[in-house]
Length: 170
Image (cartoon, rainbow, N blue to C red; front, side):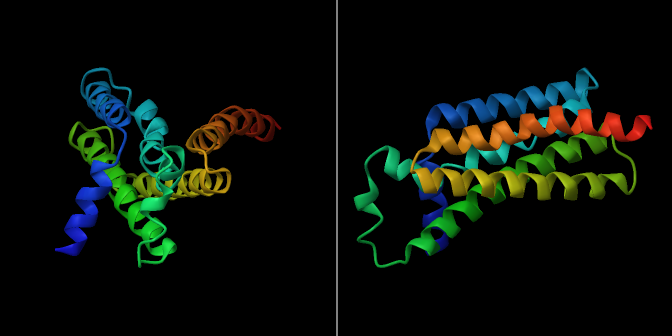
């Protein structure tokens, strides 16, 4: 019962506009998979869902000047952060997994690459969310956590392609 209450509270404190934008992105991804055959774009950008859900696990309390609500609590702070992070990350990975299943059903993924691609997206999203969580809790500012995670994501897209072109051209 206590875990269910933590789950409900973690969903309740999420920013409503952020939740709406994630739902809108998810629905757009479904349409892109089914009707536009843009599975590669969806797979590439699906790591943004965990960034949006997990980066503000604790810094939202500091942004709203509500840190007094969590500090006098008898539960250690690391347990609160881990519990909120785990719930948010679990929800975001369920969303990504459902996108992978939709792609599988619509014949964009076949056989073993399904699991391989999901594991790669899982580990990459875990890294980006932990990076955003670390930065947002150090600075006590959610926007800086988003900026560093998304900045690294964009840098990796641009520099990664540039470096790989240089390696494979020779």
